[in-house]
Image (cartoon, rainbow, N blue to C red; front, top):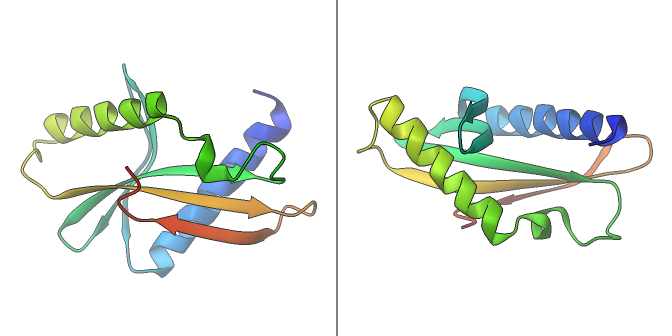
Length: 120
């Protein structure tokens, strides 16, 4: 991954976390990694544990940010979420898989933020 894309991804995750906190979510963990992959943000909204995949883009040349989450990535997110729940001893907790899609302009300012609850 190019350095500019990496920086945009990090900025997107920062903006996404700030948005979630502003909406009343509690950030539980960021960038949780396991053998199956990574989840960008794990947050809690009331009794629900929310696993959030963040996607950031500057242009729509390759589609909207949320359109870049293919079935293989969805499967990985589910596997990582399942691993996390077992490891944390919270397998009975209600969960949700969300997507936060951010569009940035050339000055790296957020121009659009789309929150897809129960995305997959």
